[in-house]
Structures are given as structure tokens and as C-alpha cells.
Image 1: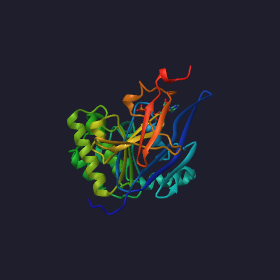
Image 2 (image 1 turned 90 degrees about the vertical axis):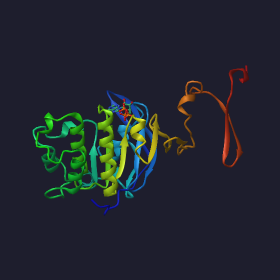
Image 3 (image 1 turned 90 degrees about the horizontal axis):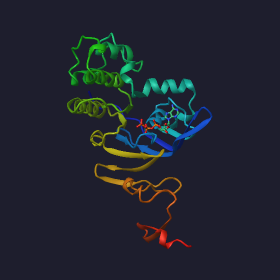
Image 4 (image 1 turned 135 degrees about the vertical axis):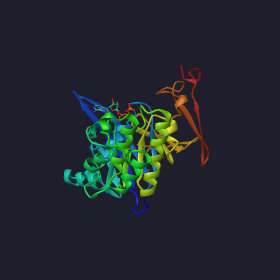
Length: 283
Ligand SMILES: Nc1ncnc2c1ncn2[C@@H]1O[C@H](COP(=O)(O)OP(=O)(O)OP(=O)(O)O)[C@@H](O)[C@H]1O
């Protein structure tokens, strides 16, 4: 495999998504601003319900955002027609969403799955990237149908299918859930190796900090927004388009919503935030 192509550049600007369920609105995304460079590997972390999967499906063109732009290589896929979205998904995108295994053909071998399901419509014959992913997982000569294989082999097959045709952007949702430690590391090795070789941009949703550490950057979502980002132990809060900054998670209980604070700028690069205690409030 060689890194012959460039990954996609992804940029979301003020992305809002509202689900309407039985007359009730649920705002899953409340203004997501995120930029991912070509070939970058980014983990999306955050508590359950923070909007990670919704963001991934919006970038995949599977859901249209209620507002905002989703720029892939500078083109706003939120404004695409259905035909353009189909072209985007089949030409540029690799998807390994939750339940990806259920999209495999259970009666076909891993390689047959790559041939039938993968390929982005343009690969003919054996796909070198998918072959490499199968080989890395020890599945190159596996003749048994996917349906009888273990979870780790099924996930590895789903990854090979997603990488077939060398996608410029790979979107992955919780790829290592239900895997033991060895299987998890092996899948991540394959994921990093194949995306690096191809130059694919990778956006991965995970709950698992250990898994996130295998990416180059970690982006933390909270309450439908990007709250913080960084690498490993270095985390930076991200200022929203409206100037808001999310508190560190551990302060949330002692600084509840509605608390009032004094914000003092001690220099252009430094501010201090002090909570106003109940005793200081006017009677
Ligand atoms: N299909 C849907 N219909 C209605 N509401 C939804 C739907 N999918 C998600 N939601 C709601 O949108 C919000 C964000 O959900 P989402 O699944 O994107 O979060 P998440 O961070 O991926 O959570 P998890 O880690 O549990 O998968 C939640 O309040 C969720 O209940």
C-alpha cells in the first residue's frame, strides 16, 4: 500500500441538528464547529447523548443538519442533492457505524464480503487496501462464512469492507465495543496502519480513553457541542462561536447551571473565573 492520495478535509460550521419525535424536539447538536485536516485521525469522545453519533451521521451525509455547514474539501454536503450525496458516499466515504457487522453477508467469507459489499463501486478484482486489512487480521485465507466467526473477526471484516476502494474519509462509531483487549489493540493497529498508508482522514467515535489515545487528536463533546480538545493529557477548552467555554467536567456539580461568576482578564492571554458564593449575593 502506498499513500498516493490525500485524505478529505472536513469542517463543520455551526452545525445544529434537531430530532423531532412525537411532536417533541430534541436538540442533539447545538452548534458544532470542528476542523479536521486531511489525513488526520481524530477521536470523538463524550458522555452518552452528547451528540457524537449524530455528528458522525451528519458528516456521513446520512442526516441533513437542521442548520450549519458540513464542508468536505470545501463543498457543503448539507446542501447536496440526494444524487450528490450518493456520489459522495460511494466515491469518498468509508463507513463503519454501530451495527456494521449486521450489514455483512453472514453466509459469505470475509474476502467475499469485501468483494460484494465494499469497493466504492470503482474497485475491480482484489482491493489491495482491503486485502492488507484482512491480512493484518489474519483473515486473508479465511474461507468460513462471516456468520460463524467471532466478534473480533467480524469487526475486522467490517473494517476491511469500509477501507475497500481507499476512501478519503473513514467514519467509525465504537469499533472496539465488545472486544477483549487483544482484539481491540489488533483492530486499532489495522485501523491506524491502513488509514496512514492510504492517507485517509479518520473520525472515530469512542467511549474508551485508551482507544482515543491511538488517534492524533481527541475532541470532547458535551451537550451537543465541542467542549474541549487536545492530545493525551493536554486538554484545551474550546471557545464556541458565541464566546462560551465549557467548564471542566469535574466542576460541573459544584458550579451548576445558573451559577454566577466574575470573569477578570489579567492579561490578553489569561482570565480568571471566580464563583460568586451565596453569601456574596445581594439580599
Ligand atoms: N433517532 C433519534 N431520534 C430521536 N432522538 C435521537 C435519535 N438519535 C439520537 N437522539 C437523541 O439525540 C441526542 C444525542 O444522541 P447521540 O446518539 O448522537 O449521542 P451519543 O453521544 O452518540 O450517545 P451514545 O454514546 O449513547 O451513542 C440524545 O439526546 C439522543 O437521545
